[in-house]
Length: 227
Ligand SMILES: C[S@@+](CC[C@H](N)C(=O)[O-])C[C@H]1O[C@@H](n2cnc3c(N)ncnc32)[C@H](O)[C@@H]1O
Image 1 (cartoon, rainbow, N blue to C red):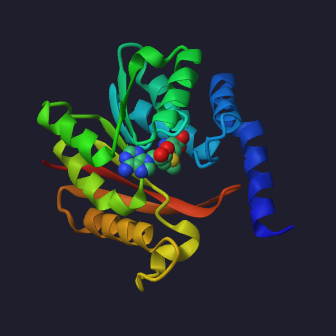
Image 2 (image 1 turned 45 degrees about the horizontal axis):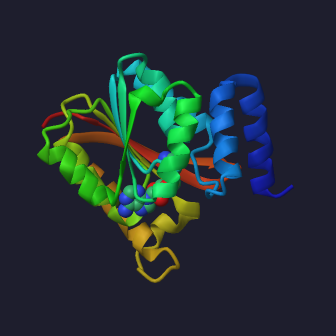
């Protein structure tokens, strides 16, 4: 078996034994694929982990950049509980439509606000309207803008806010500072994000490599220490 096949098989085993995603989140993943959206949602283990992080931190409000079909959104919506809220930012109207249907079908739609448009604009609208502070922020949209999204997230944070950034390893391409690869803008955005997380004294975080059926990747996680 190649590494990716092994990672995928181990992922399946972990899902069946220890992770046990609820049937509603499996339905959302399947419905997202059936609707023809790209299969780029977080793996089940990471979705569950982020839900647990939200629950452990007592989160009642989550801000998400990048909705797709609402798979990660749904983990957060379940974690914040009744009365909690998830605000999720999505550029593609079709993705927002699929996510809305999935979240409504899961019985969680009333907790979720989907704001359609370029996230740089919609997050600025949130800032201007005095929204926040959010308890958890998940950054998973266009990676080229990741450092800008981190800046915006900080404007919508309080001490104790948890900020998670996805896809920070990209099969190791995060090491490529040349700016010449096929996804050079995304890699540059990720590198700027990681540098900002490490440099900003308001943030205290980590970054972890992961393997899964989706390959070799990773995520960054930070807590806001001060604002
Ligand atoms: C990796 S997917 C999100 C996956 C989702 N968080 C999950 O795990 O289920 C990235 C999403 O960001 C959206 N996106 C891309 N550029 C964007 C932008 N400038 N503003 C808002 N959303 C954007 C894409 O349309 C896509 O739906």
